[in-house]
Image 1 (cartoon, rainbow, N blue to C red):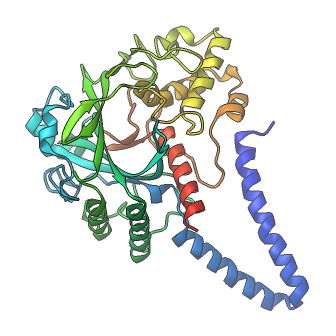
Image 2: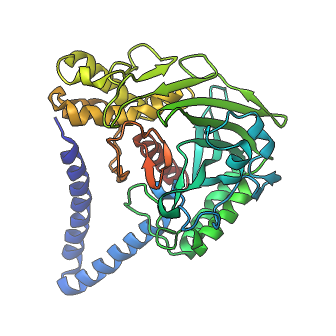
Image 3: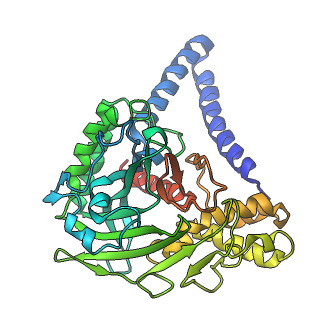
Amino acid sequence: MITRSAFISFSIRSLARRFLGILLNWRIKNGNLRRMKAKFAFVFALFLGLQANAAWDLNDVSYLMPLPARFGDDNLMGITTPGRGGPLLNPAFMGTIPPLTPVMSENDVATSLRVIAVRIDPCFPLPTPQSCQKQIRLVWQPLEPGFRNRVQTVDAALHSFYVLTDADFDSLTKDLMAWKTRNKVETKGLPLQVHPAWAVQADKSPALLEFNQIVRKYAGPANLTRITAMVVRGAGDMWSFQGFEVRNGQLKLMKIPRVDRSAQAFVNFAVPSDHFERGLISPEATGEDSFNKVIGNSARMKVGNEDLLRKELRAIHRAEDPHSFNPENMDCASCHVAQPARVWLERNRTDLNLESLWNTHAYKNPAYDLTNVSPDQKNTQIIRAFGYFLENPAISQRVINESAEVATTLNQILK
C-alpha cells in the first residue's frame, strides 16, 4: 500500500529518472561529457523556463487577491466597478440577497464588498445536456477595519458566476498568459496561496491593476448567471447558504442539491473553536456520503465509534474530491464543513488508520502541490472556501483540488 509521502516521492523519482535517461542517451551519442553536460543544462533550463511560463498551475486558475494595506484606500474591485455591460454586480441585488452580516447595514455591505478571489473554469458542471459551461467567477467579502485599523474581512461572502462563450474563454486564457509573461510571474509548483504577482506590493501592485482590467473585460451584467451567498449570524457561530439564478435581471432562488431546499444552515457553538459543540447542518444530507455525527459533539467522538467515524471520514474525502462530487450534486454546508471535520479527525483520531483511508478515498494529483497553506486549519469555525478569515488566507482543500482539475484540463486542451 502506497503512503501519502511515498506517493509524492514516487512522482519526483519518476521525473528524475526520465531526465537521467535523457542524460545517459545524450552521453552515448555525443561522447564528450563536458560538452554534453553544457548542452543538457541549457535544454533543462529551457524546459524549466517553458514550464514556468507556459504551463497552467494552481495559481493560474485560482487567484487569491491581497488584502489592502489601508482601510478605505484600496485598488480591489467593488460591486460598482465597471465590467462587461455595466457594474460587476448590480447594487439593487443587495435588497434580495439576505443581509451578509447583522452588524452592517445593506448600504455598508454593498460599499465594503470587494473581489477577494477570481477563478476560471473551462467546464463548470451543469445538470443539462450541455453538461458544462466555461466561466469566470468572482468571490466577494466585505472589508472592515480590524485591530489597529488593519484591514480584515467579515466572515461572509458572495460568489458570482459569469458564463463565457468558447471564443471568450479562449481570449481570456490568452490574456492571462500574456499578463503572466509581461509581469514575469512564477507559479510553477507553488501551492495555492495569495497570488505571487502581488504578494509583496499587495493592492498597490501594477500587476494587480492590469489583472483587474482583464477581469472587467470578461465579467459583468451581460453574462452574470448566478450568485451564491454565505451569511454569518449569531456570535460568528451560525452560517446560512443560499443561491440565486439571474433571470431577466432578477434573482430567483435555487434549490440546494441533496436537500431540495432553498436555504441551508450550519451552527457550531464550540468555545474555544478547536472542536465541534452542538454542531448541526440543517437540513442535513443523509446517506453514505454524509458526516453529521462528528460535527455534532466531537467530544463524544474521541473514543470508540471507529466504524462510524471511518465511514464519515470516507465521506469527507469524497466531498473534497472533484471526481466524486461537484457543485451540482453536493450541498453547500457539507462542502464548506468538510475540511474542519477532516482536520479534527486527523488530529484527534489517529487510531482510525488514516493513511489507508487517504490512500483509498482522497483526491490525488502529483502534477501539483496540493499543500494547504491556510494558517489555522484546526479552527472548526473557519468554513471559508476561498478567501480570508479576518486577515488570514482561508482556502479549503476542495478548492485546491478543484484548481488542480481545472489546471489539468487547461494543460490538456491548450497545448
